[in-house]
Image (cartoon, rainbow, N blue to C red):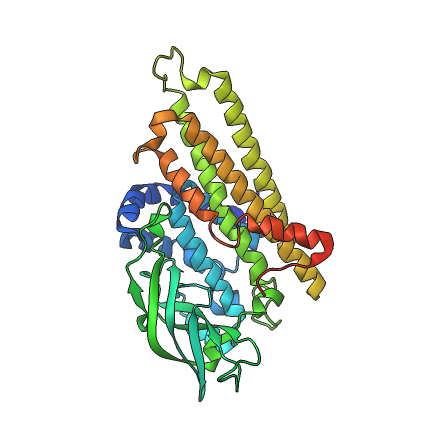
Length: 392
């Protein structure tokens, strides 16, 4: 149970589950090609997966956050790379609330927007009449081959800061057509290979003022207006939906090991793995880690959906809660998957094993800064009265 208040939650979870056979049929090709296959991309589009978090005012489904978490978890049970692409596309649907209404309608109103990009501020933006001139190179552009819009983060020098800066640069996000970006074939990785998270670069592009906003807004949430779909801060939402990928991987690993354990007799053994007491212990512990972290994550997601107070203190507490729940879930899922991978013995190490894929994928998820172990320390520091150092 997810506890979502959205009456469509069951319908969307079922739709994600129904995509399972198609995802499983394409996941090895996605892995080899290091991106979603065109056929699977089309299946996901037709199912409406990329439009879930676009506000209703711009033609989107605007499901609640808990429902979106459940969809990503369900997709991840079939393949983490597919779920990651859906999660990234959905995470950028939330950007509609931060843009001027006319801009949001121009990007998302047609129903076919697919946004990729990155929030790391490794680009440079200079003010020009009517907007900005941007350039740079960015990493981790998940889904960039499929996108028709890209989001990038840049440092904007403060006015009059040359040659000696008197104040730190402003960090801003910019949306621009994907055709302005050049993809760099760089995604050769341990796991999540099917996400197509290549580097990309922009030699020089002009972006109008209305297609940008300060990244500091992600801490306070968007300004309330009639079209607003989500008042919750982006930096509270993002950790939860990333961790949802880990939940699906761990469930896949446990179920894959259970299937293996029922038939595998270890060398020099006389009984199947499923009959060994040490295996019973490991499966029970893995299940407990997954279930407990899942309940914690969904409970936090429900609290975020119910958030009504938007004063700075309440928002800081909510961001801290989401960071902690997400980092705990990601780490607990790594522990559960590692245990199943080890329990599978030599069978786990082959590319044909689901355990091998789960092992690689779940460890890559924890390298995202929103769910890394550093968040646990950061929230502990906050709980001891030293403030939330969340990268402002």
